[in-house]
Image (spheres, rainbow, N blue to C red):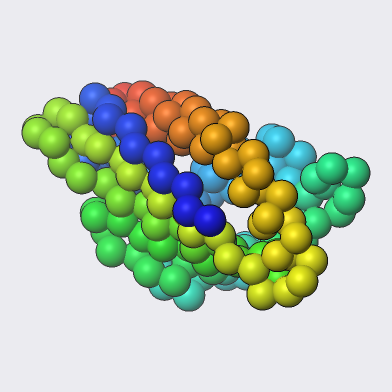
Length: 154
């Protein structure tokens, strides 16, 4: 299953990418939502960085490993997330529209490696329209927050 979201923002591409790729801020945001996020290593973003993430979803404890598989500043990065046989590959791309505007594109490709994950993915496909709308709304909200931070830091 593939989810795609695009958002245009008013912020220079370099400053906007710096905010979108601020993994410490992303971890803090996840913690504020109740997740437990542990970085396997500290330092600047490089391919191979990984995070262990634990959270509750639908009454069950979930464990996720997120790995930064590609990091090409200031253009984009890819994160692979694995949870109980469900794999999500998320590609984040920032493109400059002009000197003061940027476009964020997020593509999330979900695939299943176990029977349980296949059943979950099939149920997600049934609600695809609603899930795609929520995905777009969350990406838009985050892009606007990151653009605001990018404008104040520039």
